Image (tube, rainbow, N blue to C red; front, side):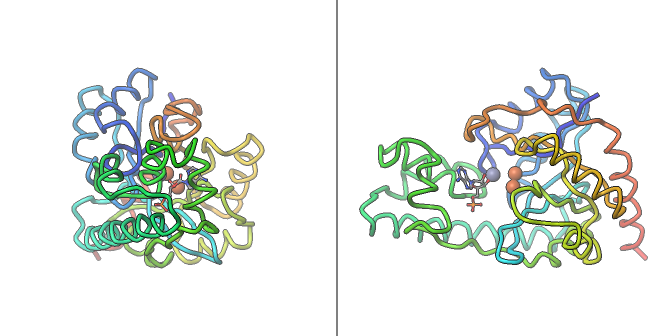
Length: 280
Ligand code: AMP
Ligand code: ZN
Ligand code: FE
Ligand code: FE
């Protein structure tokens, strides 16, 4: 049976509520899912309850960002205890920083003549972790841009006039806090930046447990290359569609990738091992 371990809800920058997302997972016949909102566990309890109703296995997840070698690198944490104090302290700080940053972006936008107000943005950021996609949506809604990509290309992207870097954790710190919370760390959509075997090996030494080999932006070739890399380096495999509801160009892609359920057991086993290690 198929699984999907990379999903966003309205708690971060997805457009489906946790309940809507799980209902969609059920209608697409998934046997297991993980909700991996950016910097928040706000959707976990609702999603887990809905998954229980539909008899879908639910894995607690989260997506965290780091800067590594000048690039924006994302890490997925699986089987974490979402009540872990240290991890939650980090997430609270990250969300507060996101809001300060979003306000700075709105200020910068008005300096460039792209006027949107804070309430315009808040209308879309009803969850816990505000991000550039919410601001892009406000720009689109106000007719400043014609589509979301244009918002990133002309204003919000790295080279845009309203770019403000996001406060992020150190990559090794991310591995440590995920392990501290009893979970396992997977490198999200590795084809978004240049990560060769050598870099991957280094990340493994620092604490990386898995590679996301199935992803909506991966070609079959990417999946093959990263699967081979993971097998050679002794890393586990994860996969997910990275569904953001209708906010991203691919649309509602949950369950469209045929990711085998065999990937779950090794992840779970490793997560159990780390829990024992941390208790000792
Ligand atoms: P943030 O976490 O606020 O920096 O926003 C990052 C989010 O913006 C990611 O989830 C990306 O999917 C999305 N994003 C980044 N670049 C683009 C782009 N060029 N077009 C559309 N979405 C983007
Ligand atoms: Zn996102
Ligand atoms: Fe990501
Ligand atoms: Fe994601």
